[in-house]
Image 1 (cartoon, rainbow, N blue to C red):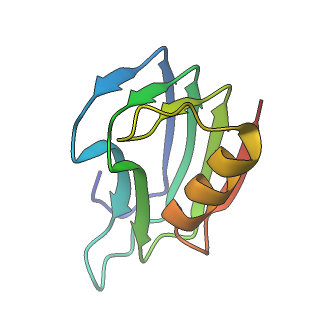
Image 2 (cartoon, helix red, strand yellow; image 1 turned 180 degrees about the vertical axis):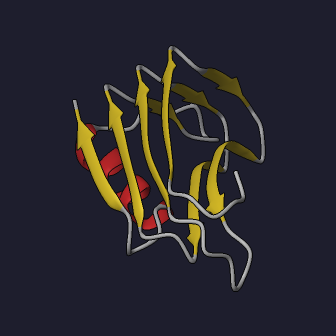
Length: 107
C-alpha cells in the first residue's frame, strides 16, 4: 500500500478458529521509514476461537497510529485446556496489543 496518497483499509474477520498455533493470530501494520503514505485501518475480529495457543493474539503497529482493532465475543482455551473467563481474556489481550492502538473488546 505504498504511495504518496492516504490509504484506508477495512478488514473484517469472522469465526476464525485456531488450534495449538504458537501465535493464533498476528495483526500488523508497517510502513517504510521515510514514506509519505498515511495508512488508516479498521480491523474487526468477531467470534474468534483460539484453542491451546500459548499466544492467542499479537498486534503490533510500526510507525502507524491510525489503526483501530476491535474484537468481539472471543473464546480462548489455554494450553492447560481451561476456558478463560471474560476478565482473564481482557487481561491477556490487553497485554498483546501495542499500547498506541485504538483497541476495543466486547463480550
